Image (cartoon, rainbow, N blue to C red; front, top):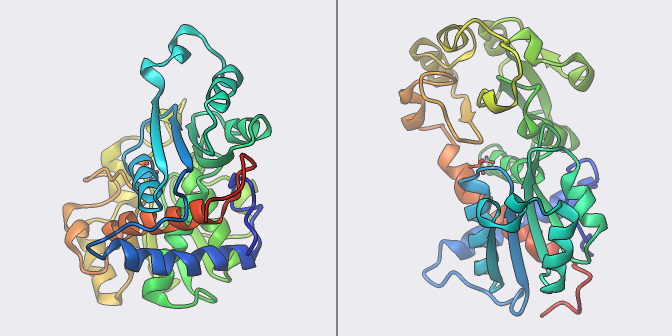
Length: 311
Ligand code: CP
């Protein structure tokens, strides 16, 4: 299937494109489990990671994914770059474009920055998270992980729990799940469940209501303290009591065979207790492993305008 130039959000992808990417990620996962983990399709191509916000999983898995496909990788470190001397995003991109990079993977606190960059460069731009807006490769790896354990997602139920309002993960993952026919419900502190964006999703008043809905997956979100300008709940202790997976709720989850997911990083004692990390249906490490395969599929599929693709 012909690739797009950029991957900026899930909204832009057709169901056929999503299925193509998920189907492509499968063989890549098999490849990265082999002793020889490399294949040549991006030989001669150059990938640049440009992260204006911290990251452990996304940045390192993009770097690994690119190297598995034989691309060269440069990690641009914003804190030691001329950005701190006041260089603008567009001037930074013009400078990097002059170095003939083929892919720019960008994370920024402001929604829309990856779209702005994409308009200014012939390189393929991949949104690695922009403000509240989108984190499309997280959506892809989440859907891939759910399909691995649940099969086709039509009619499957996923309850997303936590800070929906400030979460680009909630936006991208709920969007891809609904495109693939899954039902999505949301649960969290009232002010963190915006009506406008989630009006077409079921919302719950208590964790017991979530369990009564019989979800296949409970998807926990981190509280995005860095994006909250006001206090939306009395304390982290109170948040854990009302919205966290406590020991008692973990017993219910185990009895019902519900899968637990979380995009990371996890705040133990807030959205979950330690026991969740060793529960046999917790998929958090599987999500991390699948992040490499899903990102390999994206890099393989996109078509930069910087020259003929290396085959
Ligand atoms: N899930 C996720 O985006 O994690 P990082 O912030 O560590 O990249």
